[in-house]
Length: 90
Image (cartoon, rainbow, N blue to C red; front, side, top):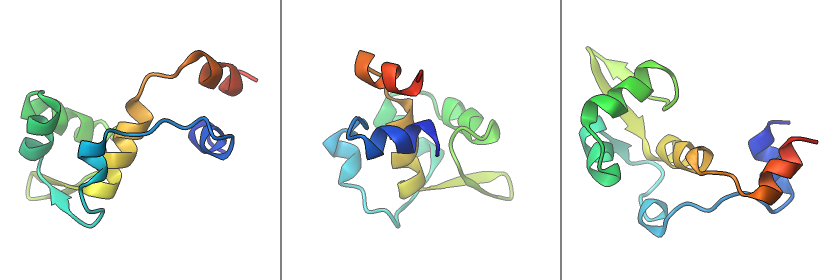
């Protein structure tokens, strides 16, 4: 079981911002759209895709990110609190 799934099962998972929750899971997002939402450069988002941190499809050098993958990325990117850190260090 992954650390993230363990936290969710114990009720210690982190919630993502309502702004991101409202995006339908089937929506396909561009790096530019994600960059705008997060106030980062679009090359930062592309780097996350290249490094495998943010799952994406690559068609002809253009990345497309499924909203459900983006939301999971956001959940996993949140800083852990003391209780969450204690659980995963068991």
